[in-house]
Amino acid sequence: MSTNTVIDVDGLDVTYGDFRAVKGLSFQIERGELYALLGTNGAGKTSTLEVVEGHRKATAGTVRVLGSDPGDRAAVRPRVGIMLQESGFAPDLTAAESTRLVGRLSGREDSVDRVLDLVDLAHKADTRVGQLSGGEKRRLDFATAVYGSPELLFLDEPTTGLDIQSRDALWEVVHRLREDGTTVVLTTHYLEEAQQRADRVGLMHQGTFRHQGTVSELTRSLPAGIRFSLPPGAPTPPAASVAQGDGTYAIETFELQQDLKQLLDWAHTHGIELDGLSAAPTRLDDVFRAIGADSTAS
Amino acid sequence: MLPIAQNELVQLFRNRAVLVTSLLMPVAVAAFFISYRDTFTRIGSLGYVAAVLVFTIAAFSLYATTVTTLAARRQTLFLKRLRSTAASDVSVLAGLVLPVSIIAVVQIGLILGVFAAVGGGPSDAVLLVAAAVAIFAMMLALGIATAGVTNSPEHAQITALPLSLGVIAVATWVGITGTESLTMLKRVLPGGAATELVVNAWNGGAPLTDSLLLLGPTLGWVAVSVVVAQRMFRWEPRR
Image 1 (cartoon, rainbow over the protein chains, first blue to last red):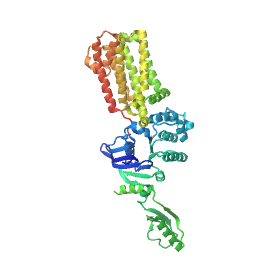
Image 2 (image 1 turned 120 degrees about the horizontal axis):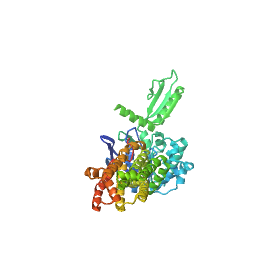
Image 3 (image 1 turned 180 degrees about the horizontal axis):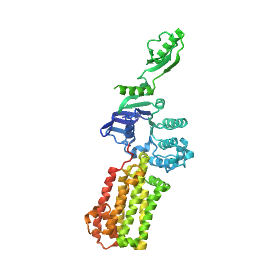
């Protein structure tokens, strides 16, 4: 483990009775990274995250967070901010009281007003949590996680229930924390967020990693797609084109730029206008679908 | 621990339902027993009334409120939130039960104080305090254990009832009939030996060595309750 390794997971197993939710998982997260832990439903990412956060004990394997056992709260938690998937606030406490309580217990120093202002909740400081909307509670959750600018930040479905402005504001705060060196572990069902923000992605399926690497490494594992339609009477398109049965054609390619140019040259030569032409690189969504298709086939 | 306790106290006073059912109702029941003390003394003794007062506060103000509070905090994932911080499990739990424990101690102090003023004080105040501490420790641990099988504050109205009424029934049975018959059974029941201890402490007349022996089963129940609490308590709702 290098001195820059913030999270080191080796051979992690989590079982519930006879069910093995996580199967020998190993990965490392380096300082300053934004690592997205993604997975299909029931993939084991919540179990993995709970062990790494220190909420659950591993059945087997070793987990080190900032050089310590994640269950050693006194050593780890003052350096770690956790945004849980669900709020977990007392409904009868105000937003300011909740932030102050979690902040004081975190062992970090900060100002309640500052963090509430960060998430645009300063005007709700004296409102009881039970009277906040779902999105406001989510922002409060985020405020308590970033209290005191932790070295390591867990964001579990951070933008679920947030409007677009709140999402942008949240990512802006994360961006500023990362500039100061904060390491971020993200789980999300919004794959475009992971695609845009993550340095690396761990994609889990049935308790193990199906893919792990940078977004471009993952998306390069599948072909990009070109779609188009031809007018009636048009000549046969280039050989790689596959008729889809609805009058459209598709080309799957690992050389998107080259094959697109070849198609456009062909259309230009024959004087054909390609209706509905689209060319898209592979997205994380496609990688997910491929995993789903694999498991259905197997 | 103290920040948790401080916020717990704030929540307690903001939630009128908990305040009335768990804290004011037991005081009302205690007031009833004190006002009709002559009748209850004829049935049992002053010591019996004192035992019922201690168990009323222990069962409702402390035990039932502990069950309700912990179930509510777990249901809203507040326990998980607190465990996401640097606070240890012991300090989280202690912070959550500290306010109700202090309130219960203050309540029983005032209630027994009033009872002593109008009906005559206890023969052995030290023994009475020891008995009350043991009863409170037992009921607190049992409250934490019962919270483990309680899914919500509403569910607490069902799960907390058997033990709440059970210990008061035992206190009433032992307090009225004494322990000359069915001695072993009465002393091993939860609260049985503790009731005898309170009765002896208040009425006097029993040798101190005999009374101290009663601390055995009482502390045994405290130990059993703590072990049961450790095994049964859950920090997160069942999935």
